[in-house]
Image 1 (cartoon, helix red, strand yellow):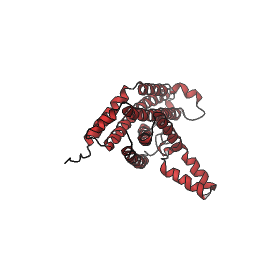
Image 2 (tube, helix red, strand yellow):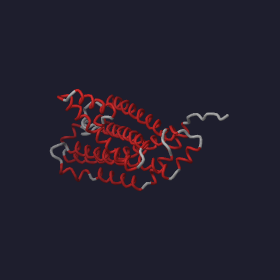
Image 3 (cartoon, rainbow, N blue to C red):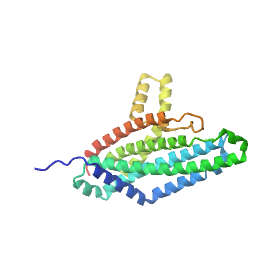
Image 4 (cartoon, rainbow, N blue to C red):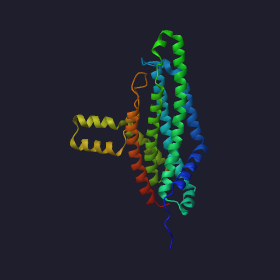
Length: 279
């Protein structure tokens, strides 16, 4: 009589480690990281295009815009490519032939992808802090009368904003992994991943429009979309980077719970879908 193999965190961790290692081998991810770093370090040269916003705030917005755009591209392509490479190379058959749960495979993939996104956000955030600190020091030297006001930027809030960006990318990775669990092609997964990204950023517009004057059917549909897809606008910390404002730790905690809820649902559905998939 065969004994049932129990769920193992060790096997999940090994799959996650292998996912990170495979991602590190891909030249595309290194290229995206270098390109994002170049944009952040070169953001000071773009300040002449600023239309009235304070310079340091403009630099911070550029940095987080770079993190959001390149991070989303990295997460979506990495999820699709690393998942389908396992299927196309038949390595998933060898892996699942061993005492490995499909849930361990899905969760391991997600943890590895979340780690890759975390490394990306950490590097870009540290580079952004360096750029802001360098420019802030220069402004204090050029305008010594402002030194009595202290620092211009709250770097703890910049770190909070970086954490929120990482949480958003983790949610996006979970939803892209859900699509990959039943999709037949890598291209479909990538396109759908970007479609989910757009919906997550624009769903609040549809909610506001239907709330002001839409029909009951429209309000119901917008409510369904709002429930099914995460609102990525909640992860943006556009304001609150200036010194003197309260640290938004409570906002980060609330958004973290919001993100964990969507990650749990998306990964759970991905496990159920992958169990039904013919490999």
